[in-house]
Amino acid sequence: MKKVRKKKIRYDRVFIFVLGVILISFLCFFILLKTFNFVKDIFVSENFYVRGSSSSVEVYTDSVTLTKDNIPRGIEIKTLSEVDINDLKYYKIIYNKKVFYISEDNLTKNKDDIVKESVMYVRTPVTLYENSDSIKIKSQVEKGEKLQIIGYDELLSDGSVNMYKVKYNDLEGYVYAKYLVNNYEDAIIMFNEVYSYHESRGDTLGGGSAANLDYYPYEKPNFTDNVMPDEVRALYVNSGVVNKIDEYIKIAKESNINAFVVDIKDNTSPAYPAKSMEVYSPTNYNKAINSYETYKKAIKKLKDEGFYVIGRITVFKDSYYAKDHPEDTILDTTTNESYNHDGSFWPSAYKRNVWEFNVSLAVESVKEMGFNEIQFDYVRFPDRVRTLEKDGLISYGNTYNEEKAQAIQRFVMYACDEVHKVGAYVSIDVFGEAAHNYVTAYGQYFPAISNIADVISPMPYPDHFSKYEYEFTSVVWTVPYKLLNFWATNYVVKRQNEIKTPAKVRNWIQAYDTNKSPKTSYDSYMVSEEIKALYDAGLRSGYMTWNGSSSLSKYSELSDAFKKEY
Image 1 (cartoon, one colour):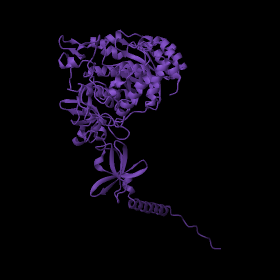
Image 2: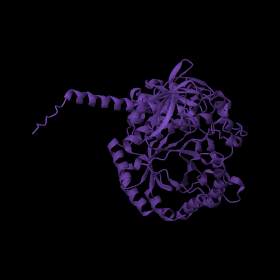
Image 3: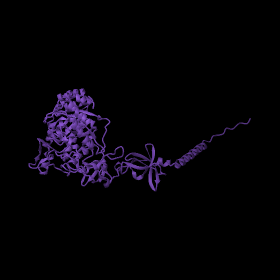
Image 4: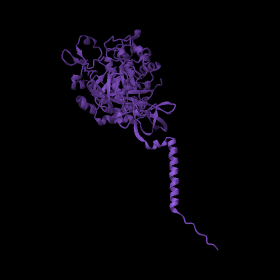
């Protein structure tokens, strides 16, 4: 039988065959990838930042149809491949799981080059800060001014700049980007949707012209971890009674009260020794009524009990600051010393050091004490000084040649920018007269303040009106419903409609008996008439009780007025 011969396996041939198959497969795969332009995606991949001259950058979603879209400036992306579009180099990228094509000019590896703006123009007069992380003021820059852009602090999530580092004349500093625009023409245009309401209201009383104020819509914050009640019903507590806070809490809980206004600093009544006082006004620091621990314990109790807590700061009436810094006060030109206005001394609203002190105190108090809101009072120049001004007997130290109402609105803007950064709201107290259709002699103009602040708090105390105001035949403080409903309907509501972004209106109400003749007791009926008058006019954001002594017995007497639903 013939022997079958085994075939010898040639491993060298097998190896060559397998290698050939691999090479052919790789070549086919390479051709396939090349066909779909994927090879470059693998080998050209690099990391870049999207750069541009505005918050969003124009890109194509299709390299053939050239359909356009926008992506945020500042995002970090990976390029996949190079593409020629209209003889210009573009890169294919993926952002949010979508394919885009972006110009080579809109990519950079250097974070400092993300922002392409070289010049910007001031749309709304801006504060020039020394640094991006400080409240220190370097200068003021007017509407229409040109700023050279030399840097920025950070980009927001939508690609917009928070603050630009700028050069202005021979100064360098930081300004908030939201107040700037790209060209001069847009910078000098007034906000015409509402400007017509104000431009004819000239300067009749020395407080400035309504036409020179800013009415551009101002975005109001809504802090998710600090919710402002739709209706704030607040008792006022002065610095001297903070140590009795438990008694006020008891009355509040029995009276449908959900908030407190607590003094941080009143004229000659600093509530606690704040670090800001130690830096800016040692006299305020040394004269503090309560210890740091006592004050903090009281505010914590209010917060723990669920109350919304508002810290009140008097700004441009501060005799202790005036003592420390007479150079920042309104001067009596006959003596060259601080002007004494009815026994008090007034730091000038034109002085930026005064701004810094009060806003620094506000920011510190939010951080240290946990206030939900900061209320600034005496945000104005002194009243009844027109004759002294005309005769040159007082001097305000007007560094930037501003009108009174301009300085007031700009302070409010500065305060809001800084207090909002620490997550608290800002309210501004104004006289009831401020709602009239003119700029007051002391610089308060309702629409200009309401446009910026989160809350505007008029003080329409019936006994502060003239006896027969608005041609009433009855003494006005004897008919609080008629008076306040007329005032609110004919003035406040109209002023609010003259701006696009009005603040909430939360009024102070008179919670004390008037001593003016005829003397009138403000009991729970009279106080409820005040509240009802304001609510019926549509001003339903709440009220605050003004009783200078914070009288427990008076608050208890008025409890029935607070319990009512209006």
